[in-house]
Image 1 (tube, rainbow, N blue to C red):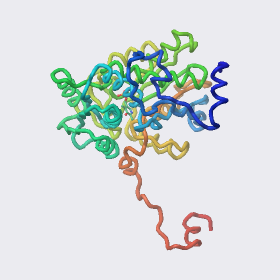
Image 2: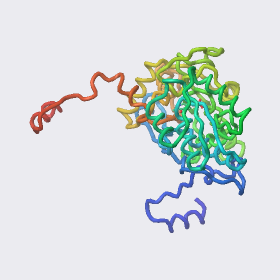
Image 3: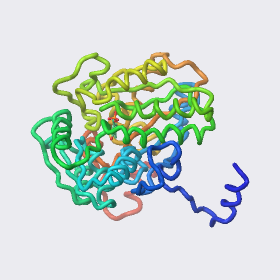
Length: 368
Ligand SMILES: *Cc1c(COP(=O)(O)O)cnc(C)c1O
């Protein structure tokens, strides 16, 4: 810690955390200048939580990057603060995105702060209720499209090509610039790059963004090296694994239900240049990982977010993780966004119903 930052720390009230959002924290690394208005909700600075369960399993040290702790509950906020700030600087009055739910939740929040009109295209009837509620509360025009995410993205591109609206999907390169700050944070907190970084892959922007971030830190000498990137798709939506688009992708993990990822080539480059892998996990593995993470580590994530954890568990069980590694796993979004899927595998939400009586409670709790 430098002398001036420890003096700053001495002046701050105890417990106050001066996190200013990813643009101010990583300004020098981002495509902004002094004139760019900073549209922020204080995103980033998310917890990196040590996982005893996963550490035992891989016989190394595993830390979970909890991106559900971002202001709208997913990592999308990192890219959105950057994309919306730049859109405002360029004079945009309206913004459009295609979304499986989290991009729209994030985009509408940042658009609301910036006073932009948000237009959202989502697959009809296939978006988790929590995410839909977010877009509605942020005042968006939500258009449901009879089709999947891939069709929604085509329409969004078409609107942005023809009308005065800025496209803020991750095909917008500024989004990836914002999202790369997650890898900076991991290195800053660990004091080194991990050996392996694991994450889910849907439209494949995030794995590409992490690779940009890890590479930039290594090139600048902030980190000694770069991690291998291990990405996991859902088995029913695994175009990169199969090597061909999936026309009708299907998985409980709606945030990665994508058949033709926009950042496909970038993700393959991230995989190959890092010496990593992109594989798939089944819905059953995803839901099991989601429950285990919640019950063992106290971290509740949405199904898509558990794909990386499921992949790491499978790799460990197959003996594919050499012992002694430092591994980080990004869990991408908060479990509260999709309680319906979380509870769908549970037989009965309420375990027991009793009269208001201590001994009855003690009996069903197994205390008596
Ligand atoms: C967007 C999203 C993903 C997938 O990220 P990509 O950049 O599309 O690969 C995974 N999990 C959650 C919760 C998301 O919102």
